[in-house]
Amino acid sequence: MYDENDFTAVSKFLKLGIKITVKNPMGQQPAFSSSFPTPKGTIVNLNEKSMYDIERKLRALLGNDTPVKTKLTPFVYLGTNFRGVIYFTKGSNEFILQETHNVLGGESKRIVRQADTFNQLLS
Image (cartoon, rainbow, N blue to C red; front, side, top):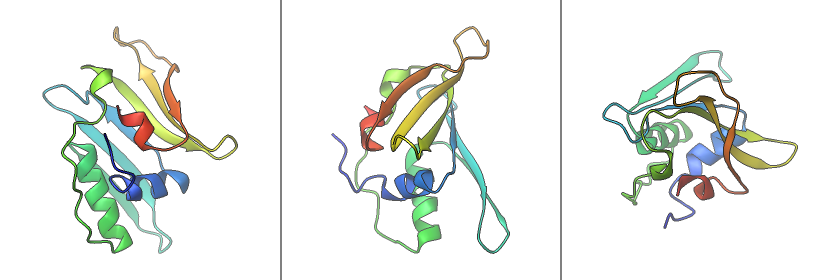
């Protein structure tokens, strides 16, 4: 299982309002991406092949050099060809994983999973 410290930076940034786009997480070419402005006015673009790489980059932005310890594969239940977005809703205080395109490629807004903590979304 995931430790509560595994994705602390991702959790913090999601609570600040960023969204992480997920594409094909269990396929041969997974993609996790996000783009958001900094307080100084610059834009941060993250395009990584795993959620762990996103966590490492966000920890670097926070000045936290604690290594990511777990090697579990997040989002196994999604399978291949999944396209969606991860975000945090401030009103209900929930992390949400929403599908943006279904298996056939049509647009979708189906909520795949919602949880009180980010780690509950992963497995």
